[in-house]
Image (tube, rainbow, N blue to C red; front, side, top):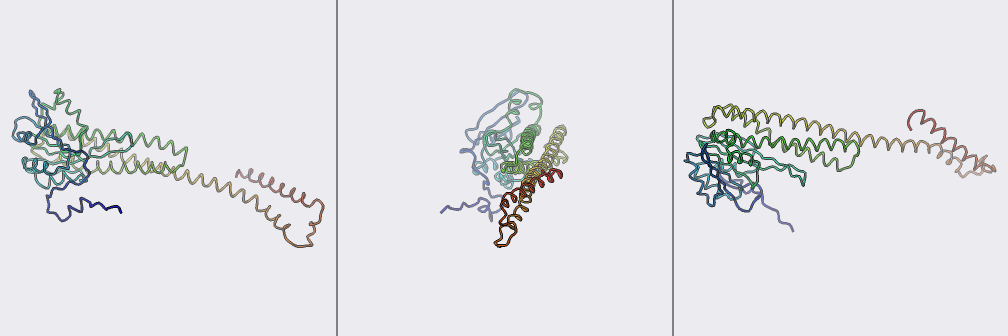
Length: 355
């Protein structure tokens, strides 16, 4: 008999607030911590062999970006949180991969969590991964579920000192990371848009059950995308409007651009949802029309055979004194009458444009 797995959420129930329990799937074997330190003249990038290697970043004059891949090792997350004096409730939200995108402001740092989306080309699905950021005075800590992300562009700009990223503070680095996540939303919506166009053409040609499954599959992806974008819109709006000391005024202008991008993505989601609803109506209408055509053919056939059945029924009665029963050409006459009836009904149906 198959054993029933105990949900981590159920195991967490009843524990005091701030208890660190990883909720979600373990996506990598070992946790990985990387560190990037920089200013306008200096740059250093490394993978930390021990967690202690990134501790000086708290008081370092350089801007530091600490990236943690893997959330299943709660002890390591707790040690990092204790050194940077992160609130236990914040760490609890980091470990809960089902967390709703949100922003929270503390005395010395800002916490932001959101969903990083990507396209799985092999399975034609949208993958979702939770990414959390903590912004301090001169440092940013990012928590990811697994290795591999969409931040390579930001790393390249840091290495090659392109643009303003090494001229500005940690708040601008946070903006660049958020902007990378939001920009990737456009790729996801474009992928869904292309799938929708292909699906629309297929619906016009066929009414197979696979098309219904594909429609439901795309609807589910749109729902997941909307869950990721809608709360993030509120979080970015709060981040750019609130007077937060850690966010410079010049950075709020960039955040306003991110907010506009999120609005555009959200509108695209609504548009795609309306299109999918229209495709669903088109699919159901096509099935209904084909069913009506089948019923029309069957009705015409049944209507033709009704008078023939009547004739056969009359002359199939077991009475001895039927006048035409012993007529020499009676059989041929009946066939002639039935053929005339069939031809007359077909002509009538054609005049009515039922055929």
